[in-house]
Image (cartoon, rainbow, N blue to C red; front, side, top):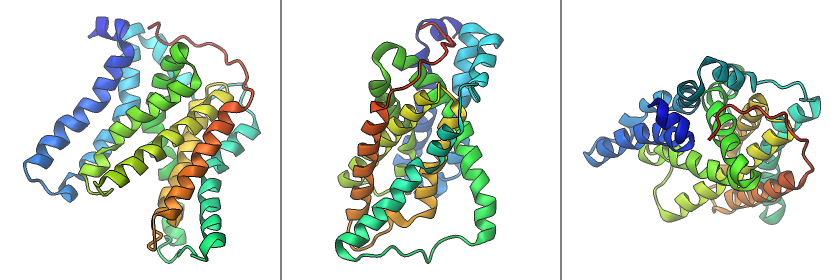
Length: 268
């Protein structure tokens, strides 16, 4: 395992993240287990990306490299503008998509299912800490970081999004997304655009995993608190939202970025 981590860190990480998810869920799903009965696996699988990143780093280079990966959470060159950009970025696009839909055909979003204040107070820290902490050391801190050394930020964040989407496709097996071709296409267009935005802002910040966590949180604010995906009259609002995400993705990548301090966690 140590030699695999040293020679093929990217491939080993992807295998360790994807194989448990699909190796467990597909056999259970094909054997007739109901999607709702698979929901309990989600919390377990949510721990995989960051945990496997730390494991591969440890196997390849030991404890000091693990400390360096952990140290990517906060970097000295972070400024308030990056924290602000991370927090409002994707959430603002979600709100803008609702506004555009209303101006286009008068279809107003319904906020009747918005959680109450207590639920929001409890849920907001969870949306910030759990998905970001358990995923972003793996997606941006490890996978994108390794890929962008080979192919640049755009392709690295795009491929990271495809791996992220393959991992997140557990939601189809768990019944959280419809399994028709349109929904699958929309899902991957959404998650790859989101990955490019997170990856671009991550690089802009100098490589702060915490900044990536904040952008991830901004995306979850849309998914859980804004009715972007619940406009019953048509799929127009999700398509507007995804279009805005792709525009923002190319805008983020077009901004002149600082040269980050190189932290070579693993020599691929």
